[in-house]
Image 1 (cartoon, helix red, strand yellow):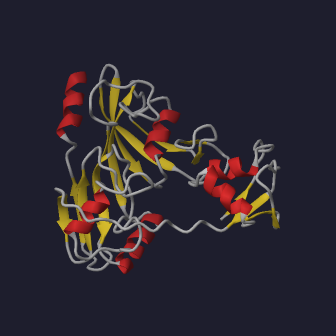
Image 2 (cartoon, rainbow, N blue to C red):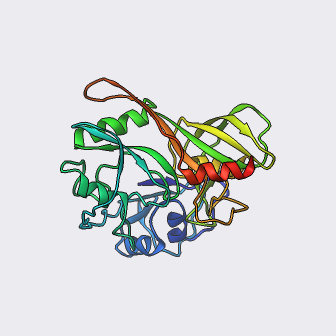
Image 3 (spheres, one colour):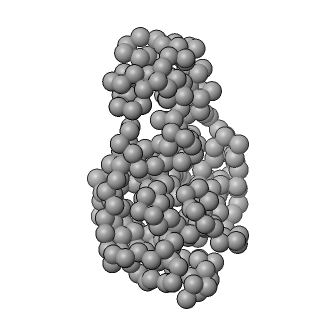
Length: 296
């Protein structure tokens, strides 16, 4: 991995800086630095080095942790399935894949039980072409073999898979439709969050249109042009209309057991093998509808 230190990023410890700009903990980064596997301007550099503008930081990514995933019987809402892929309607509250501290009761555990054939079987994310946050419900694609996985991933990069979401946001959105074109990168103050920033960020584009305005909230349809982590959640906060019930980016929260009001409502793509046009749309869960009714 290669990171170039930008303006206004100077005087941060090397280990802290890398941790803030990657998905890796400071502990893991410190270990790499001790092993002299982190280079600044082509030289191994200690953890306490304060980064300077235009420094070029390079390091090999740590190997993905090997986890034996235990198949678990669970009810999966399978909207479509063939020999190559499946479309799943994920419930809100279900974590998609195992991670440190959470190796069971994820969607992947259920997929391993349900499907005899699945892509990237030796990884910790078998079948997962694109993920949904734990508290986001709705449609997602699962690949059944490695070749199809690669094809679907490439289709996402080339914007050949259309994904639309329903988002209930705080406040009354004035414009009937719009586009948020704002780069997203990791939040320096909170590793769990992302933010709109020019610092080590990636292009992020979300299109939205108003479905219905209520007194306190607005129901939007959001179409992703890019697929960054937390993209809709970050962009909605950025325009001062955070998603209702969002535990990380929301400013207010409805007191109930349901998660953030974000639902992957539709997916449209050309099948990578059969070339058949696949188009699916799913209604939001009953809890989502009940909350909408409370604002009506």
